[in-house]
Amino acid sequence: MVYLIDAKITDIRISDTSIDSTKTAALKSIIENEVPKWDLALSLDALLASLEQNNPKQQPDIKTDAPQVIYRDHKSVLVVLDGDPKMAKLDNTSDWLQDQSTAALSAAA
Image (cartoon, rainbow, N blue to C red; front, side, top):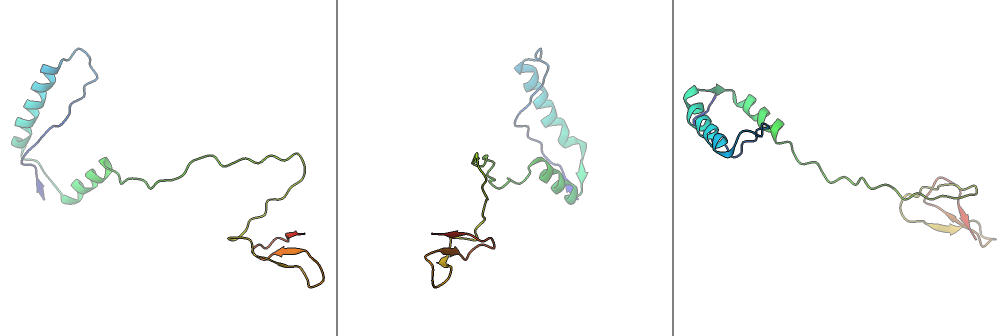
């Protein structure tokens, strides 16, 4: 079990604009003085879950940039390569090169 023995309020935000800073300071003081008298107890698991919910782990940096859009007004094919292109002669008699790093047939002269 975890017992609350002290309360410290770092910030108070009230949506009612008619409440001034002296009233919020008084409210802060009342809460900090009265809450420890309440003899609050809760399980460690519930406390850790509450802290985790209120302070989520930072998300990894994820790129959300839009990809480059390539427009062609004629037929084209997107060839996905596994790493850098590995060009090899198509056969021993021609000057054509074939890319070995893709399942698609791609050749260059």
